Amino acid sequence: MDNTDYESLISILREAYYSINCDYFLAAYLQYPNYNDKPNGDFLKPYFELWQRGFRFVINDNKLILF
Image: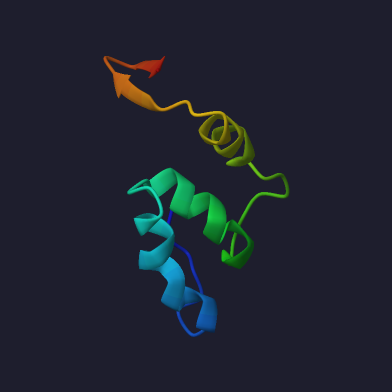
């Protein structure tokens, strides 16, 4: 997902958001308010809530594996 307004000052933080945990999903969640085209609901919030609780995941053979 990459529809950020590159003219905005917050776009400077893209790399910093990723560097927090080397996690593209977390970076996307933190940048979500800045996206130009987005669904009404925050579809990344469930991922953030799992991340907050210390869960990580991998996708393998079309399966989501939490650890």
